[in-house]
Length: 229
Image (cartoon, rainbow, N blue to C red; front, side, top):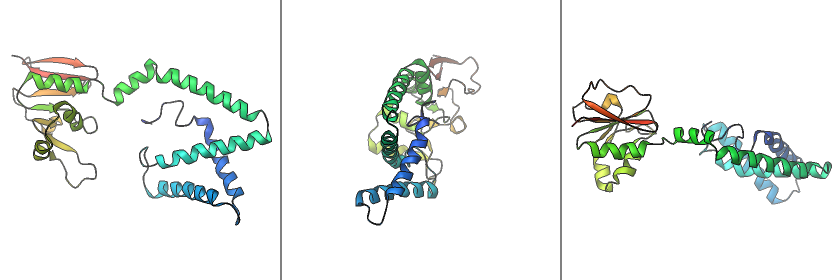
């Protein structure tokens, strides 16, 4: 999963049974005379579950459930602590050790390599370099999500010129893919293969047949192919 760091998950994998236990405890506590706070909270949990059934979920659409899950975990641990005295201090120590392990891994090389790949390390530098190597068209890979956003960071165009120059592959698509923006075209299949075209591609992407007319420069996970002068 792109949005979670294995093997920790969102709230550590061991907490899932506690979250379920917390929900069960809330339903058992709920009576015809229960207080309004419990009722509202249960409505929150149920609405999240219904939302997950009706709508394909991802990290952005289902983040409404994170707070209820945390609260349910806390309810379960408090209840267990009342029944079995050592549970609560053991849980606190366990979470503390898990947080230390997570912090070490999160700031270590393993996560850095994963984050560099997921967040396209080197692309901004590659685009900046490509923009200086030619005044002609620039062909940018479409093997990543929404590459035109990175172009906007590099070029910082006036909003009017941005809106006037952008072309979409399918304007009716819910996630519109950009075909071209300013002098940038996205996807080798959409690019003009002129002798002055500069290419910004992923390092594992096969470039077009450029012969010995081009030099190249690596930027982490990306390569800039530019014409020799």
